[in-house]
Amino acid sequence: MINKMYVLLTTGAFLVLGSFYFPALSQKTGLILHFLDVGNGDAIAITQEANVLAVVDGGPDYYSDYFLSRYFPLLNCNIKYMFLTHPHADHLKGLTRMLSHCEVENVYENKIGYTSKLYGFWHSLLDGKISSISNLVYNTEFTSGSVVRLDNLKIISLYPTKDIVKGLDTRVASANDVSMVLLIDYLDFEALLMADIEAKNQELIDFDLLDVYLDGSLEVLKVPHHGSKNALNTSFFDKLTIDKAIVTTGPNDYGHPSPTVLDYFTKRGVTLLRTDVEGDIAISVR
Image 1 (cartoon, helix red, strand yellow):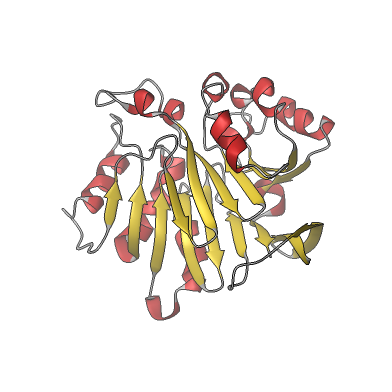
Image 2 (spheres, one colour):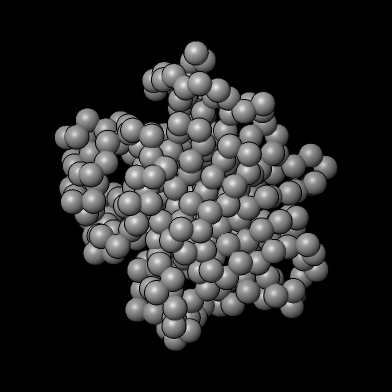
């Protein structure tokens, strides 16, 4: 048996959160999930050794690009997978900087009828109108059941379904309603990234598909919508055994995170982590 450890790394801190057992590791070292302190927004990176395997959202500014620059010697910037969960600026802006100067192999989003100057700029980059992107595979649909695989790493979409995305060529009421919900599955480790999905739509997440990949408890939950009260669906979360819940938030006028949300996870005995308190948070899986 090999001892499997989940380690929390924050700015200026190192803490062992727990240890578990599993039968085998990949030939490479384990993964690190980085939840970046980008303020009231989302920017998540998955790295292995000196490689950036995936980024999920990029935050409201260019900090995420600055953070990842340490992985790019001589500006040799390469990202295997890039995911945009939905086109709000607090998730999108940092991705535009990466897309402008990095060699990105695959981009995934659910393209919807949402209008903003930034979202238009994003598509101008992807369409090559203001860039010279080469060898990029642009996927305009990554709906429930879609999977990308890289060795022992799987990234699975649990929401939205094709039916929800279909016909969204006209303006949607709220981009949060079609936020991409992703499961990160690496051997016996799972992390659920819930973007900004609101409580009413959490009932539509493919829980049966989640159950297929889940090995017992969920090691990491990225709390939806920065800890907003409107994103707390207790009937959904009550189905899960959660080890650690991470709130990505910063100074804001919306009341994020809600004391109701924090109280719910605390009462359940879940280890609660916040980027506005810890700074950058990294979960190492090895």
